[in-house]
Image (tube, rainbow, N blue to C red; front, side, top):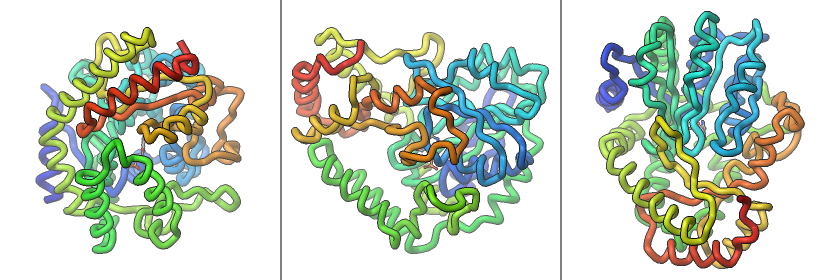
Length: 391
Ligand SMILES: Cc1ncc(COP(=O)(O)O)c(C=O)c1O
């Protein structure tokens, strides 16, 4: 199963003149860790990342003793500000991880031009959506990597999972060695995964969202369960630089089976997301609210539909009172870490937009199962709370 899923991903990512190699892991954070390790990232190296992310993206860098260098975001697209990024490049920069956010790809062209003659490796964190890699192919004479999450809410859902796609890579074989070295999740992990997927596909709906949201939080914070689903490995008090037990995992055949199904339905999923986004657009236009920004020359994967409000904490609480599904991810620049950002080398003053976005962002779901009543309820809620929305 693992190899047939790998082969399907190879076919999916094959470009006109580039056949990539693919490695599969238990989660995207593990894929990222293994990739950075294969590249040879070592203490003192600098890895540039978005300041608007989750701590699971930062930890693999920290575990290798390297230094995360954050780049503030553009508040329209929520992706890295490329002009600021260029200023962060130093002699120690080994890797730049660009991040698609909510489905919006980082504008890559100006960046490619400015790192052309430098020995810097470019990685796309495509957990929320992909670049149009066929357009990048023209400049693909240097290594280029894509890693992405297959968490249950992502575009290609394996329940949990991560993949690395390597183009023109001399490190792909090192990555395969690591993949083969790691064990996949055990029987109990698979049972929990089945349970998760069953709930997600068959039971979770907009009207019972908050019930499952609370149940999930309890589950994640329970130390017995977190042994099987290691979370973000937050240890704000002790040494976060150690890789937690049970972290390094390859992909299990069950994950590959779910992933295969999701990959073969990707176009369908995207079609449904586009139809949902059209309905959100209609509501926003009707209420004279700002619609979601799209890139002019790339695909938006619409993992979420976003807008900003004056205070997202109170806005979400109001929605919760009437049982309306809304979310505010990421609620901190290093979600789910809420304090002591300096432990991860994050400076709030230097990353004002990311900090601001965390306090103001609202995400609407684009899951295939949204019912008509959701849109009616949302429209009413937005029209009542219009004065909270930032234009
Ligand atoms: C942008 C981004 N990158 C990486 C990850 C890590 O994914 P995973 O949970 O598969 O490790 C996430 C998690 O949601 C994410 O949002």
